Image (tube, rainbow, N blue to C red):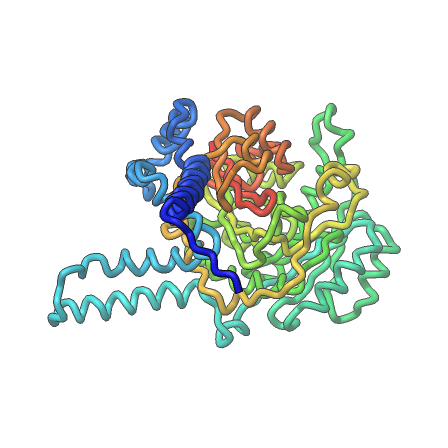
Length: 471
């Protein structure tokens, strides 16, 4: 066996090599960290855009949040590190933790005096009260009743929609199905009637052209007939049949296996939070590759439609002024929305298969055919959804968005954004359209806001990263 001895000079050389390697590792780490977060604070244009946005959110419950976020941004490395670890997986739990911190903050520094014990008891009771309203457990599931209103016309393929609704429906008592048919198409009528007592079939009696349509819009008569049908059908289920809640679907929609679970769990939110006006199963940006989490729910200022819940109270508000045509775009106008929001999922619970219709396949070939339908059941009724209440959600959402790295669309597409969650700023409608198109998101605005936005922020998934497009 040969023994090798290292001289003093050899040890010095070896030590120098180790120092060189370790030094380069440290420099590489600092480079990655710098370009994943810190660099955004060195670009004057990005700083100006960010500051402008933060100044604009200081209203109502968000008053002061801009100042807080700016303070956080002064510590980019630490903030970015924390937000990357917590931003997605812990978003839901953080909302509840923040709620608990708010309730207990006034007890800091107190001992277990009689007053503090009493206060803690009231805090627990208040927290329990909130959860009782927004969490539907097994004991209350059977109390949920919402009529399923299927809007049909001349598609015999309505059978596909009805089969899925009946397959996934937990009970007929909780979710009776009413199919309202326009058009007078007899083949479609026979398909609907073949289900017998499993569903109720009603027919729109007026099949004539809609009166009062402007002469330059008569080529769009189909849209006016649809609006008239919606008004008639909603009148039937709310005013004649006297249901208090309806879930509206169309005759060309597939529903996910947890479609009813989703609406059962989210219905109490409408009663609890007056800032909400609908629950939707749809996400306009829910294409394959652009969604990941089937448990993630968001608030949106945009009315999504395509499988949505409406209450009788909202119908009473809309009925006297229901539009002659284009009812869905009408609902997206500020006069109807009144700064109210909807709940929507990250992965859609509905998917359209109707390429041919009044819209002549608009968006279908380029977009709608790629929408992902959730295929894994999520137990929403066993989930605390209090994080979706406006006071909880706004505080956490704005802080979350503004404590992740700010990057450009070129850096994101070039895979130079070294974080799992980032923000990209847009300065105008045209700027948004360019960015959204490059990322594969819907580019159009309705009622002055982009699809799926909340407080000017559109959240999508791009190449496995959560991306917030911020105005």
